[in-house]
Amino acid sequence: MSAGLAALLDDVAVLARAAAASVDDVGVAAAKAGAKAAGVVIDDAAVTPQYVRGLAAERELPIVKRIALGSLRNKFLIILPVILLLSEFLPVLLTPLLMIGGAYLCYEGAEKVWAKIAHHDAHQSEQAAPDEKTLIGGAIRTDLILSAEIMVISLNEVADETFWNRLIILAIVAVVMTVLVYGAVGAIVKMDDVGLRLSEGDSAGAAKFGRGLVKAMPKVLTALTVIGTAAMLWVGGHILLIGTDELGFHPIYEFVHHMEEAAHDATGALGGVVGWLVNTVASAIIGLVVGALIVVFMTFTFHRRKSHDTAAEGHGAGAGHGAGAAATEGHAAGGTATEATPLAVPETVTPVKPTADPATAAEPAAGPTIASGPAAGPTTGSEPATGGDKPEAGTPKH
Image (tube, rainbow, N blue to C red; front, side, top):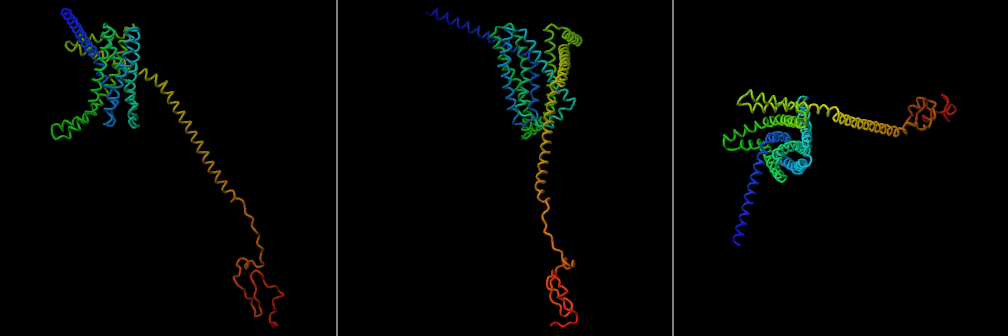
């Protein structure tokens, strides 16, 4: 009985050591996979702060939190299931899908460059800021591409593991990378508030540091916007560079690779850094070219069609408004004419009987008029005395 218990305990110990070794292997593999994706993580951290720039301070962290939750949904509900299933059943589709995402990043970066060159950003800054839902949606869409790049790079590093080990490793990478990226983003966007608090403190040194931090943060955010745009071009171009080579088109990748090796060999101890810079610049140039082509295509197709539809709607609305205004004016004019119609009809005037004396008719007497002569009787202005009634001069009245 005791021997059987000892054997069982030995088996449990062996399983525990195997599990610990497996956990260690998973941890090492996750760290290795995360290290390979570190460059994209830096890009993601540089891109995201531009989405909360210019917002009220109290809304920055809530928006970063919502973007982080959207990033986790991207990784666990979309990216992780898709890449695991594709790696099991259709691994050939991973590269084309990743290249589509890379082309989208190139388009985003090139569009920002064009907006800066054409001063479209100045006009946009004068308009009302987009609502939070629009900002968060744009950030989550961009995060989807960058997160897919992180996860696919990590998958390539653990492709030899079993399915369940890959699932666990990629889940760990998803959580750790999301916390790192959006923790850094939250710290970046709140640095100015931290500086403001320090500037109001009692310590002179801390107050000076806080004021310097407040002054520096707008420049830091502007620099991060530039870095984020460059990162979109770099990552997107690098995805396309690697993808075309994996799909069988080798000239572009080989040319860039030869340039990288030549720079590495020519710079001695700095060869690794210089070679990486050459590859990065070449990838960014590829991304800018591809993105510019997509911007031109979108401008002369979808954007022009949208502008045309908007102009047509505006023209129709303007015509309707003009017709309505004319009808309103006509109705008002018609109402006025209708009201004036009774005044235009002449009233029936009773003719006045003319008088014998126009002067008397013009100025009727207010009282009796006394005729000249002693025998003159009273007369009215409207009925003058006749000749028979008028006595002759010098004849006494009987």
